[in-house]
Image 1 (cartoon, rainbow, N blue to C red):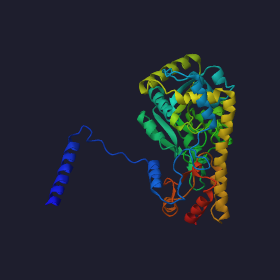
Image 2 (cartoon, rainbow, N blue to C red):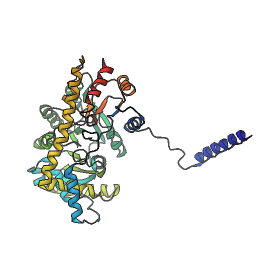
Image 3 (cartoon, helix red, strand yellow):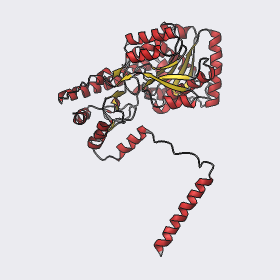
Image 4 (cartoon, rainbow, N blue to C red):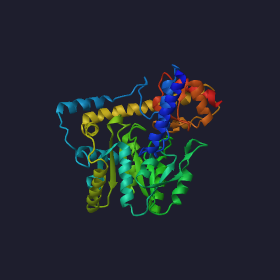
Length: 423
C-alpha cells in the first residue's frame, strides 16, 4: 500500500511539473548544448587517476600546475591599495591612461597612428567584449555588407559573438590537417576570390585553436592581397607577448599592415599576457583616416557601449595601466611575460623530444612549429578517446591541447600516452 501511495505521489508530482512547464512563459526555451571545454573539465574532476591531466582549459598554469598571478600584478595591486582610489564610474570609453597605453603596446611607442591621434581606442570587457563592440560597429556602420570571413577553424566563440551582433560568418582555408600547419596557398586563393571590401578576421598571433601562425614573409603576402583586393581586416590580438615572449614580434602583422596604409579594426585582451582572466581587461581600436572621422567614430562607439553596459569596470584596467605606464613595473611584467612564453615553448620541445625518444615513427615537428597556448596535435577522435579512457588525459575531440597544462613532471607521461595511442 505504501509503495502504491509513493508511486501515486511521484506520478502526481510529474504531472504537476509537466503542467507547470506547459503553462510557463518559458516553456518554449530549449535546453542549450553543453560547453565542450566545461564537459572536459567536469570529466577530469571525476577521474581518480593520480596521473590525470587536464589539457582542455585555456588558462596558464605554472610548472606545479597551479594558477599563476604575476608578481608584477601583485605589486600593482598594492600600489592601487595605497592610492585609496574611489569607486566612481569610468568614462564610457574607459580609463584614458589604459587605452592610450594599449594602443602604444599594439602599434609601437612611436607609432604615427597614435602620435597623430588617428586611433579610437576604447576599454572593453576583455577580448570578448572588444570583438562584440567591433561586431556591433561593423553591423551598424560598415557600408559593404554584414559578412565576416573567419579562418577555418577559429576560436569557438567568434561565431556566436558575430551572430549575436547580426553578422554572418563564412570561412576561408587556414589549417592543413595533413601537415598540422598553415594552408598558405589555400588561404591566399580564398582571400583572392573574395569580393572587394570583404571583412576578414585575422588572428594577430598564436592562432586559437591551432597554434599555427603565418611567417613574417607570409604576412607580407597576405597584406599584399588585402591591399590589392581592398579587403578590410579585423585583427584579434589576444596573445600579444604570450606567443613568442616579445610584444613587438607578436604585433608584427598589425604593425606591418599599418605601414602598408591598410585600415583595420583591432581587438586586444589582457587575460593571457597579464594573467588578468577574471578582471576582464581589453581594448578595441578603430584606425581612422583623419580627425573628423576619429571624432565621429568615437562618438558612435560610445553610443554602442552605453547601450551594451553603460560603463566599463575599473579594477582590471587600473592594474593593466600600472603595468603599462609604470616603467619599473612594465619591465618586470615583460620579464614575467617572457617567462610564461618560454615555459610553454620548453614544454613543446619536451613533448616532441619525448615522443622522439620513445621511437615514434610520426613527424611531430608541428608541436614546436606551432606557437602559443594551444597545439593541434593531429590526433584523431578515436585516439583522443583512448588518451582519455586509457591514460586519463583530457582534451577536446579535435585533438587540441593546452600546452600550459603540461609541466616538467608530466611531460614524459603525456609523451608516453600519445605514443601508445598513435602507434
